[in-house]
Length: 166
Length: 295
Image 1 (cartoon, one colour):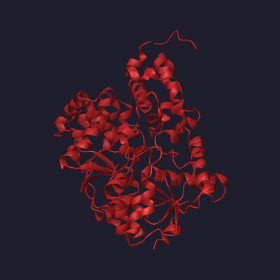
Image 2 (image 1 turned 90 degrees about the vertical axis):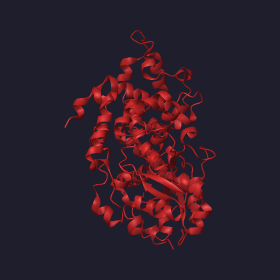
Image 3 (image 1 turned 180 degrees about the vertical axis):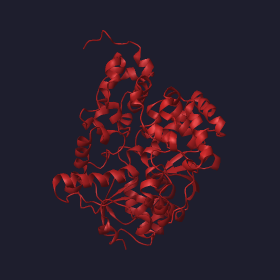
Image 4 (image 1 turned 60 degrees about the vertical axis):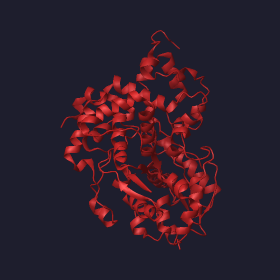
C-alpha cells in the first residue's frame, strides 16, 4: 500500500476519539453485519484502518458506509469500544462536508415538509380506519418556517443552501 | 400512565392500520397516549445524522422537547425512530456543549430540551411496564393452536447500553413472551436474531445481496419451524419482510414465501377484540390464514 499521500491527522477531522486507535482489526464488527454481505461489502474494520492511516482520497470515494443498515450490532460486539456505527456516521458526515454530491436528498425532503414521507395527507384512508387528523408541521406554515430557519443555521443546510431554495 | 406517541413517517403514511392498532390496544392496558403534535423526522440515520451534529441533534431536540412539554416519556414503534431519538437524547444528555448548542438552535422556535423525557419502545412498554400476564388477562380472543416466530427489532437490542432493555441483548425474550401471552406457541430457529436487512442503504445499494440475505432467513424459518406467522415490532421489519417475500416468489417462480407478517400491536388488538378491517387491513402478503383462526 502506498502511504505517501496519506494524511497523518485525518482521523481528527473524521472521527476524533481515542477509542478508534484501539481497533486491532479483529473483524468482530463484520460478523453480524448485514451489509457485509453486499457487493461490494461494507467492511467496517477496513474503514477504521483507512481512517487511522489517513487515506483521504480512497475514503472520499468509498460508497460502502452508506450501505449500513444502522442495526448497531457492530457497536454491541466491538471488544475495543471503537463504536463502529458512530464511526460510519462520522465518515458519512465528513464525506457530505467535503463532497456535496454525498449530501442525502432525504434532508431536502425533511426541510421542505418535515418528513421523508408524505405524513398526514392520506386523510381518506385514515378516516376509514377511524384515525384522528394528525397535527403535522407540513400543514403548519408558521412552525415549518421556524423549523427551516433553525436548519438554515446548521452546517449542511447553510453550506448547500442552493439545494433548499423554493 | 401517559406516554407521548411518536409515529414517525412510514406508519402514519403507509401503514396507518398499525397506528390504529397501537391507539386501540394501549389504552386498554393502562397507557394513555398523547400525540406528539408537530413532530418532525426522528431524524432518520441516513438524513441529518449522516451530515452534521448540529442538524442531527437540533432535529432530535425538536422532537424531544415536544414530549418534555407534555411532561411524559415518548413511546415509539419504528425501530429506526427509536434508536435515533435515543441516541440523540444520549448525545444531548451527556455532552453539555451539545445540549447548549441544540438549545441555542431551538431558542428562536420557543423550544428547549434537557433530556427529561425518556424514549421507550412500544415492545418495552408492553413487556416491562404492562407485562405478559396483564396482557393475557385482558384478552377476548387468542392465537391458541397457532405457531409463530418473532423478529426482534435490531434497534431495540444494540447497542444495549444505549437502547437496550432486555436482560441480555444476545438472548432477548420480550417478543417471545409477548406473543406467548396471546396464546401462540413460539418456535425458535437458527436465524432468529438475524436482522431483516431492510433499513438503511443495504437494499438500495446492493439489492441482489440484500434479497439473498433475507432469503437465508426465510429459508431457515421454512425449514426449521411450523410457523403460521411472523410477529415484528418495527415498521421497517413489517414492510420489508412482506415485500421481500413477494420478490423472492417472482424469482423462484412459485408461491414459496407467503408467511403472514403482523406488527405485535396488530395481533394484540385483534385478540382484544378489534376488527381486522381497522387494525390489520393493509398487507402485501395475505393474512387470512391467521385472521380466520383467531378465536
